[in-house]
Structures are given as C-alpha cells and as structure tokens.
Length: 302
Ligand SMILES: [Fe+2]
Image (tube, rainbow, N blue to C red; front, side, top):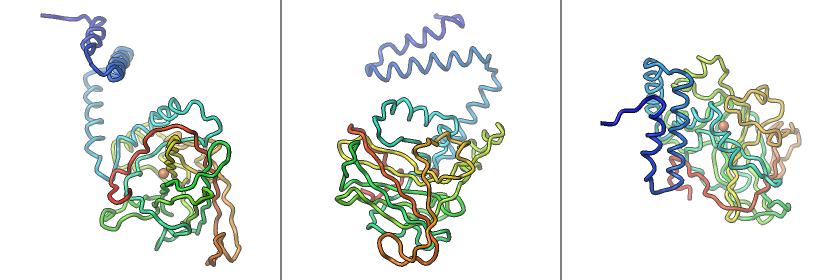
C-alpha cells in the first residue's frame, strides 16, 4: 500500500497525470495541481474552509441556466477573464484593445439593416452609433459581421428580464459592415449597472466590501475571416465607475467621448425626435485566426 508524506503527495499526483496523451491537457492539469496544492499548503486550509469552498463552487454551478452564467461572472470579478485576455493579446500592433466577453453574450443576434433601432419600445436617451472596421493599415473591411449588445436604461440586459426566451432579443443585434467598413444603428444611451448580486458571486462581492458596478458601455464582437476575433467594449467617457470597474475591464483606448447633439436630423438623414447622443468608434483588426464565441442561446443567429 502506498502512503505519502505531505511533501510527496503533490509530486505523486503530478506523476499520476504523466500518461495524459494530449500534451497541452497534461501541462494544464499538472500546473493546476501544483498551484492548488501550493494554495492549500500556504493557507493551511481548514476542513471547514474547504467545505465552504466546495459549497460555493457547487452553488455557482447551480445558479447557471441557459441565460445566466455565474461562472463567467466569477471569473470576471476575480480578474481571471482579463488575465486570460491579457496573456492572449500581448502584442496588439495597433489593433483595437480587447476586453471581457462578459456573462451576457447569451442570446440571438438578429441581423438588422444599417440605421435600425435596437431599442424598440424602450425608454431612454436616444443614441446613434457609427462604427467602422478596418485592418491595421486603415483599409476598410466590408461584409464583416459585428454583434452588439448593451444594457438598458435601468442597467439590465434583455436576458436578465423575465420572459426573455419568448420575447426575443432587445438591445442586441448583428450588423454587417458595408463596402467602406461602416455600420450604424440607433439605440438608447446605456448606463452603468451592477452585476447580478443575487447569487454566490454577489455574496463574494458583499463579503469583500467591493461595489458591484460596471461603467456604462456597449459590447462589440467583430469577427472577420482572416483576422483575430475582436471582443471588446466601447465605454462612455465621464462615467464615475471607469476607475473601479468590478471586472477590471476598462482600457483607456476603449473610452469614447459621446457627443450630445441637437441637430434635427441624425447622420443617416432621418429626423431626430429631440436631443441625441453620437457614439463613434473605429475598430482595427489584427490579421490572424481564432473562433469567435457563439451566444449561448443563439438559434437563428448564423
Ligand atoms: Fe456589459
């Protein structure tokens, strides 16, 4: 019968994974064991704490549904999502900065024509968004699908509201760039919002006396063949939470000045019903490859 001293146990577990046929999986598992064992030793983890951790992770999983992703939220608030982003995007070469996907890329991104209003029937200050997709040399990229999604005037995504699966998407859509790399749409101005705090991640945020707020932003996922998929946000300048985003997702380059306009017409020539905000942004894509994530509930998005 084999019996191990505390110091030998880690080596023995790591050795037990030696025959893993996939070399990358072997590396990931052995390093995980090394880090977790080290954590237990360094903290002198008690049985009670270990049980609490198991219970926390169990409840995190149980909180997940097709439209609620508590594990992504946990990864986000612990800075893991941004660290994975950072180690995978060390060389930007002038390409637009990336940030977290977030837990709300869940629903159908219905293709809509340029100028469409993705906020149909919702209250809020009007906003017109003009964006352009180019390569690193500033040459336009046409025919590129761009998924957009953002929170409403009360700080909620469509997927957080009751009846989402029957009602379908709101404040989320897909636009395809024209020959000049451009896209445009109407919406409402997003506001800063709290991440959901009615689950285990919320308990963690409260126990650590952090605030749960994210600064106002619009999510963009730009997926052009032959280029790295770009997962990013455009943040709104002046938001009070830009310096303390609960998921550590803000990068200076992604903060955009939003202009308040009172022109009677929006840029596409259609009448404005009052003052409106103009958001503009240019996305520069880096050559490469990679697969863009798919929305978790998408049905007819392709
Ligand atoms: Fe968001």
